[in-house]
Length: 296
Image (tube, rainbow, N blue to C red; front, side, top):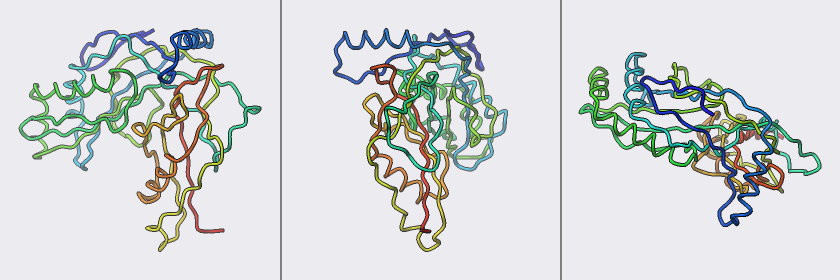
């Protein structure tokens, strides 16, 4: 249940509803059974804060005041879906050095809470026009991404976007809005605005894992001249069927774009055992590291 909502301007209260993420085609009785399983699996709750970060994507320096005014303008138009459904569970620890094949006998139950994470790209023109926002990383929370995009578009009716573009003497300002209930992101070094604070339930589940024999990532040809080692860390949601949801894929760290592309191409060929609570599969975000080396 939401404890409070805090943003640049007041927002409507939001309710939390955690869904089982059962794949389509399941019977109503099966879904109802999994709803009961999820309720029984709730162990406790954890306080979370949904934070909104606004960053420049084109290298322009956005002053703290300009950032705050733009966020205020956008969030003044934002209304979260009610109830807010957060079907994705938080990540477990990233596997070290290599992915291991799932072994049911070694499954361990961990406490995980739902997590909300989305990234939205848009551009402000000197005229004050705001281009339609594109969700480069989708939250998968029903209706949430659409509400964020609508709020960004509605901000064009205010004078703030045009004033910021003129102040920067720019014909176009490329921006990225990040919304997250997870831990602070070291890649984003700007002050966030609190979107809402809530208590999210923690549930007992088995984490998603790589299953079967998965292909090794090929060392990229573009890096062979230098022959350096490469590291990549990917973040992606594994859905209730065990498939990686490409629309949620994000590169958290990469030695180079070539290494990142090689890792992403390999990831989409992986097979996963989805996270599950008893007999009910649930979506979960995971972090997957890749290492590249020409050394034996």
